Length: 544
Image (spheres, rainbow, N blue to C red):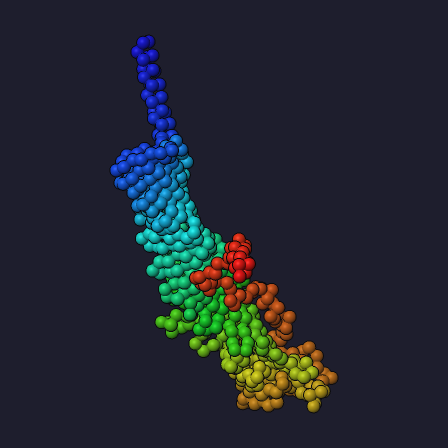
């Protein structure tokens, strides 16, 4: 029983001593370790020459100091150095005030705050040793092994290895220069996160901009932009959320994705997109849209999915669009299940129930391809079940069909049509373009037709054509239509269709850019300074 009581007493004694020691350490006063000369008067101890002091786990060095023992604070002068004996933190300046009660050091003039490989330079720094947080104001610079960061004000949270930079923030490394007004930098992974407008310029001349902030891993050179754009001489990529992997030249965008090929004058839009820079290969999904810009016109293509391949090293360069394809241009419209656009010769191929409308004509086939020259529809090639319909001045349907067809256009209208294999034509005979006389129906292996304003003006037929004329009074649905006739004008897409499919908000031509702001700002005088100058002038006038 006696042994148990003694053991308990010993345990409580050890616990009390630990608590007392901890309490004494937390509330310890500044200690003087060394000074070559000590003077004291009116509660101030003046320490001169090689001054050394201690406060808890910090050693303090300076040339001289004023020690206010009752207040437990000191003013430090000349070659000030505060060194943490436990953490790798050292702070130097030419002047400082240290409060042992609040554990706050206020350092002024040529301040250098060092934490391992991270060094902060400023003229004004308040360092709270209790929270391990340093605040600088009136400009500061942080340097580590990769980056140099500057701003007007900043907060360094040492425990979290996090620095918050505010106002006129600039991050510089060998590859990029970044500007923002609000940036959080993590010193261990060396990542930068910004809020609001952010502008970046690369050493290669790329412009990387974000309107709603960004994330930048300065070591892996990966970026994430919110309402961001990455642009160079050849390409512009934009998205509401844009990921950019610089070493791999890879982009991935979400929401309002757009990829502009400046060389091709082609821009692709969609909900989700991927782009490989070196291959010039892109994939865009979800209400995808293409705009092919001509000098005075634009070709629109809408589809579920778009794939573009435009690598100079490859001989085949193309744009693929598939599922529910629609296309619109000022002089033509079309629809199909899929589309192939050849960048080399500007030819377009349509597959699976393609239909093309051009002013007064409608053409269809199992597969179709056409060429655009001088911004106008130039030629059309139709294969298998080819069918062409053209309206004349009286809105009659002139019809042609065959195994293959080749149509030539002039000024946006069909000028000639060649039919090869099982050719049939049905066209209305007019009197002075104002009265229908009847309908001519001709069967021939080959047919060549010439048109003016939708009406047939000349026709050539192959060997032994078979023809029949039906007068106007005997024309009915059977005699006035070729087998397979289908006027599908209600399916013709328009510009309104394209706008409903995806309404494109144009990019601002000259958005705000922090690199456009001057590096030097003019300081306007305060009201007090103005009044002071006025008082000086009034004094001079009164003393004349």
